[in-house]
Image 1 (cartoon, one colour):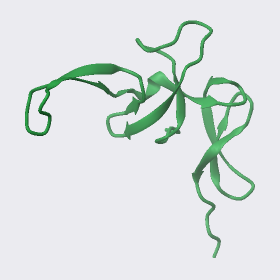
Image 2: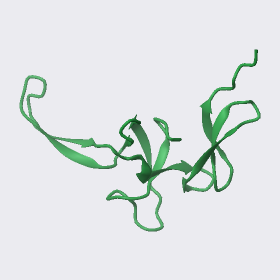
Image 3: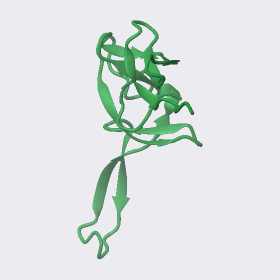
Image 4: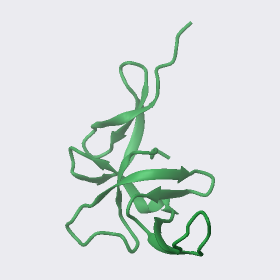
Length: 117
């Protein structure tokens, strides 16, 4: 799984998929790796009805994002300007990095270089 918190992603399926030919990017808010779900900003918004209480004296409806399957998003590549499949490789510095399978551009480090003793 090559998606981390604060990454920019593109929704590829579901109700929040953009129209054909358009690319909408969103920011990853949280990841639940055990359930295979991801919370993305502005995607899968639902209303949560809240009863009046001391904490929330007005009550009403809260609008919040709910998690979606990780398989429904792709990481966004700035060079390709679309969501792309990713791979991992060792950089020249020895660090493990993500890269775009389409153009080969680095998409950030996964882990720092290993220390040689």
